[in-house]
Length: 193
Image (cartoon, rainbow, N blue to C red; front, side, top):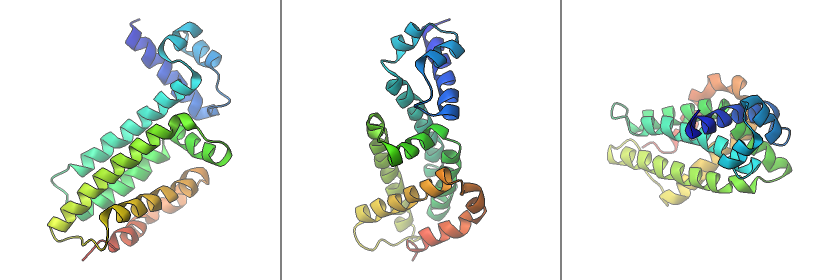
């Protein structure tokens, strides 16, 4: 088996175990055993359990960005449709991103400092892409910006991130997902002319 296949195998097993048992209850010994790899193989690819978990979460975030980029760059949608689809797709993807949920839980009890750079990068990426959508909407006359766009974007991101705790940790996603259209209408109404 090649080095790349070994790394992918480790990541696949780690993803499943971290998703099921969480960061703290999953050990490198368990990952090695289930992946049928020597523990040394894990440490060859990942310096620590934190590095391995960080890579697993990074893959979830890359998946999120790839799917959202498709919406942002879709020429067949107007800006209002893009914002709505972006928000719905974001929540759908994050609902199934169990390891991302683990980082949210950690914020209540302890802080995964080794995830901070991933979060900061995701925030910057989202801000840039939402800015692109809003400016496209301003150009087409769909949206109007009142005040500083960077402040607007920061608050917009705070609002959508504020939904993550009740949706994903308090298991309210299924209850509220049928009402996303109404929620998104509230969020986008303030941008409309």
